[in-house]
Amino acid sequence: MPTTTKNSATRRPGAPRLAAQKGAASGRSQDGLAAAQENAAAGYYARIEAYAQKIRQTGDVPGIVGLLDEALRDTHALHAVGELAAARRQVQAAERRIEELKAELDLIHRLVREDPLTGALNRRGLHELLERETARADRSGTPLCVALIDIDDFKRINDRFGHEVGDGALRHLVAIISEALRPHDVVARHGGEEFAVVLPEASVAVATTVMERLQGVLDQRRYDTGTAQLHMTFSAGIAQRRTAESRDSLFARADQALYTAKREGKNRAIVAL
Image 1: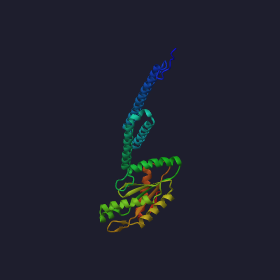
Image 2: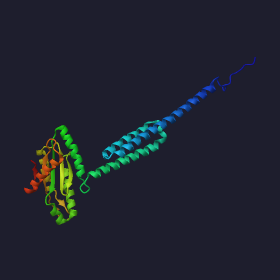
Image 3: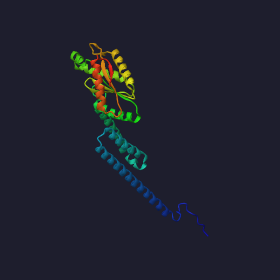
Image 4: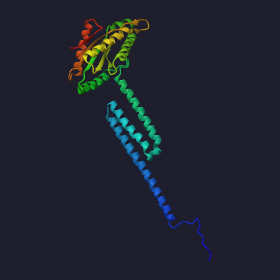
């Protein structure tokens, strides 16, 4: 009888059906991946739209920055989801834009809180700072002092040297104050040639020492006008916040002490009653 040899190319029974099943499974996997992509993208864009709605309803810059941080975290999370690999470039572009918006908002927030001439806080920044510091002082039971500083005979400086030199004198004072203050003390322009220094966790004795040190540094560092070495002094009124005292009351007492310092000869610091 003739012998029958098996052909290696001969397919086993059921092989076509197995291949078809594998193809179907692969198709289902592709369909599932596409669905996952669509669902993830839809969820992401829905969250971004929700953030956009919150931003439109938020007038507080720090609040907006916080929302952008949340949106950025959601965007970062997309990198970890393999099903959105096809949208990687769009994701990276979104991240860059969010970072740019945060930087722009940070700049705007700083500009609306800072005095453009001296770089010190302006009144708005001062009020925001005091709101935080008074709340912290109330919680912790620590003292909080405010000192009002006024350059002595500033009108004479303007009249003799001109307003440009007067502006330079203001910048000179703020630079010296900023260098000589304790790390957590803050200076703000209160108006004209008057400045406020906020001294957290400072008793009247500590605040007085700080003011006297500032006066000593200013006495040693003349302001170079380009044509003269200008000797500057300032008077200060110091007030320690009473329990639950309002901002207006605190500043009124410091202002009265400043008036007393001017009346008693200038270039001195007086503590409010």
